[in-house]
Image (cartoon, rainbow, N blue to C red; front, side, top):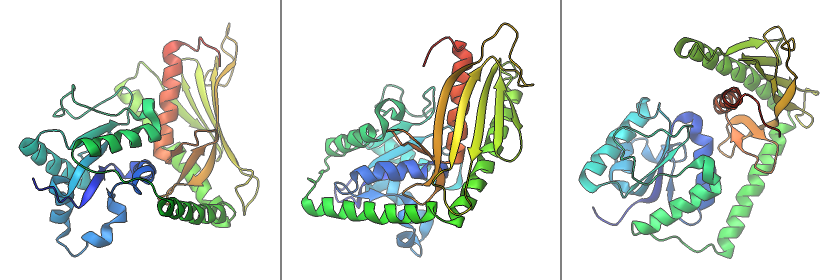
Length: 317
């Protein structure tokens, strides 16, 4: 395959994972050339789109990074991407491909060798995965540019523009309304996941209930995941928070289980916020400041609840 690649790195992902893809790409885009579909749509329109899109992953990119979930390869665009990637590895091997599994326990496509390299987002975080990508670009013959003063200034400009748009959104009626919509999206997704679990793993017995518009509760095996959206003003999100707590020793009637002792095992707070890709979602209010779409947060919180059920809450925070 020729060495005149159009992109150093092309990202493949499900639509809900676009904010994460952009977050990783932002760490490296000043040093390597990056392809993300939503940023290159105009470039592909009018160029026999599907063929051009497949070519990005088949031959135009030095390295392909897949943010992998089990549903990847089952949607319209990821099916095209998977076909292009599989065609390429049959011809060239796996050196061009980096899998970044997003689910716990780790899952990979059946056709991907389990002994081949993959990057654990939970272990290394966004910065760590970005570093792995740069190393892989170099290992397949690419060059990672040094970060110059001009690059630094351009990055600062982008950060200033984003922070201005983000601040305007958070101090607006539009932002408050969008946050309320995301609360309901989160509850709908939690209800859907709880229903799937009850059908596929009834022994786990997860149930969801809404208490009014702004309170949602998940119950399972004597544990409660309580979500409360607190919004004080109609034109700013400055004092709004989503409170997520996992509490031991509560039943579906919200009574303390006999012989049990209520104990808060998780207490996490989230701000309604925008991702750098412009998606509405939730940002964890700690040093990590991880961004979630509502679908991602529902999955994350439910897995946290299941984790507590598994170990019986026998730990201290």
